Image (cartoon, rainbow, N blue to C red):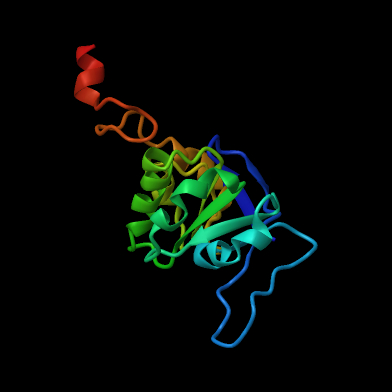
Length: 168
């Protein structure tokens, strides 16, 4: 199992399995022995079967719209956002929407093609856990989460831009 990096830089074992989207004609194969992240639209389609289950979370692909679960986000213990390629920045927008517009309070995890140099920017958008791409050195994660001492813009980690913080 891969390791998960927490927002404070600590590393822990990942108990969650990401269940891939089934091919046409196949059914969703959810493991019974560990918590699972399933595609958000399939969770919504089977909502009556999954509601109240704290071992089921969802994951969004970069083209998914988080509005689909807007009024139910805090029923989920974990939401993953997939970065299919490191150059695809739509996951940052999904995270900001989940945190700021929809008020998601639980764990928000970056999955997929996650690189070390993205961690601090993901943190500023509201992610609080990260699964690095398998070929990256997880021992460098804590340093990468706090590479810059200040951010210029307002984000989920601060309501004021730097020029306002300095003036205050």
